[in-house]
Image (cartoon, rainbow, N blue to C red; front, side):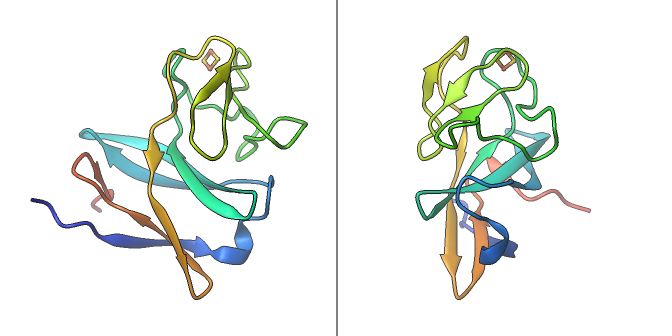
Length: 123
Ligand code: FES
């Protein structure tokens, strides 16, 4: 079994509730993809930045993922809405939920967790 590695992502203070995301790169299923971290209702969450309608990044304006209510993540292309805490599709043309990436927050630093199909980008 692969070990899970915790990779430093950002300072906890960079993620404000319903605010801008912090982007990062991952290798998901062998492909390099963009990912993003947000904070919602006090907790941090991260997803692969790929809409389930068409495989496009959700944000048209970089790092803007929340809709105007601050309670849903919105795809700028056709308006699919996803739940910020689970990535589940709420409405719009999404076909299933966003791919979640585990995060943890410890002593003011947010880390993302690798998984069997989720690796850091090697330089
Ligand atoms: S590409 Fe996201 S809603 Fe169509």
